[in-house]
Amino acid sequence: MKKGKIKSKENLTGYVLILPWIIGILCFQLWPIIHSFLMSFTDYALLNTPKFVALENYNKLFHDDIFYQAVKVTFKYVLIAVPAKILFALFIALILNMKIRGIGFFRTVYYIPSILGSSIAVAILWRALFVKDGVINALLAQVGIEGASWLGNPKYTLFTISLLSVWQFGSSMVVFLAGLKQVPASLYEAASVDGAGKAAQFIHITLPGIMPMMSFNILMQTINAFQMFGAPYAIFNGKGGPLNSAMLYVIYLYQNAFKYFNVGYASALSWILLLMIAATALVLNLIEKKFFNYDD
Image 1 (cartoon, rainbow, N blue to C red):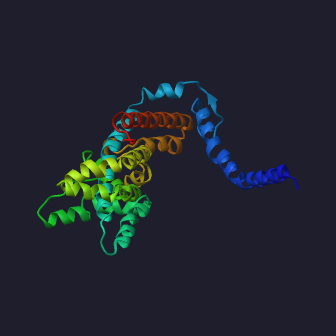
Image 2 (cartoon, rainbow, N blue to C red; image 1 turned 120 degrees about the vertical axis):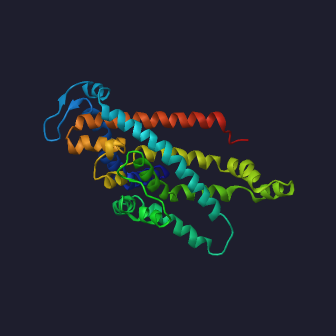
Image 3 (tube, one colour; image 1 turned 90 degrees about the vertical axis):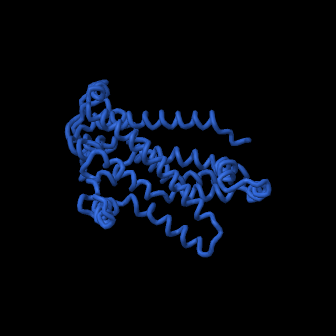
């Protein structure tokens, strides 16, 4: 058999093997994206025939007070949850990078919250912990501290759900741990000989060494934070919390699509969310290029 025919047969086999993946991408990702974009220009109530309304849905956004509230709450959540999660993940990674007996077991245990943290069951448990007469306030009462209404007071709602996000630090921790393993031990040895302390070593060796992982984690966790939905939805029973203080963007999008059946308006909201995420990612990328040079 000629070499060309053999190669063509191998190529055909490869195409057949990846065909299910291609079909899945086209049917379950590309088409929904295109369809949502088209629906954003329509008045569509899910069960009715879509009616073309041009830019009316996008114009409506700028006169929607809840939309502005959702954007404000979401950005506040991102600014609270992402730095806290990154710092905590880095702290745990530094601990788990130590050479102590049984460290593999502890690495596994510390990753478990990230597996369970996004489940509805854990969100309901979180709500039980932070209600006015819940476990957290009971523990505070034991040391003479009067607990707050963590879920009923608008001042504390974002703080409460941000804590749940921080608890899901496992994926970021694993990335940091991989980065810490790549920092040459010889650099720490040379720094110790020069008299550098642990703090100086961390600032001048560890941080520069894991900066690519830091940038990756910040970007991925920021994108995830913009799309936060499940846990806050379960904690506040599908609502936006007291005075919409926990009205995250995706919760408002979901309400419009599946509670009010304003599918066209929800589609417009989804595309605005895409633009917000893209703009934020671009800003983070520009900051990374301006202040960090990984070739040095």
